[in-house]
Length: 127
Image (cartoon, rainbow, N blue to C red):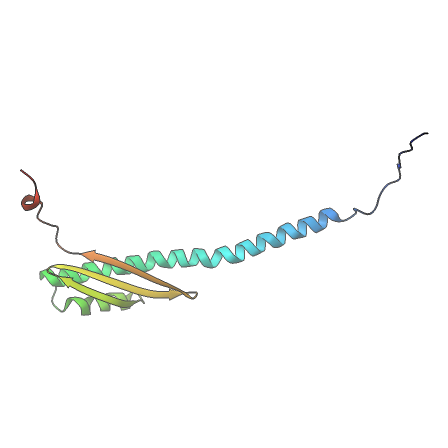
């Protein structure tokens, strides 16, 4: 028995490369559409952290007497100046801890910062 190979061109796979290319482009568009808002949230998280640092430093300056005013009110003013909300302000001696809050694309963002004079390392050093 003799086996014959079919050498006629097949047209059933015609256009399969185009369909694959369209699928790859669609997948890339979907990944990009998901990634851009997430990167935006990460960028805003850094802005919230910077605002918390600034608010804590300003409140600590008031607490140690460099600036006049009430520490938590100054921290709230600095947070509002950065277009964020002061969610908390805790005073512990000369140390001030603040929490700044924002919401970006439905994600709540909080950042805490603490500022104050350095601890006296001479009194806590072991001899």
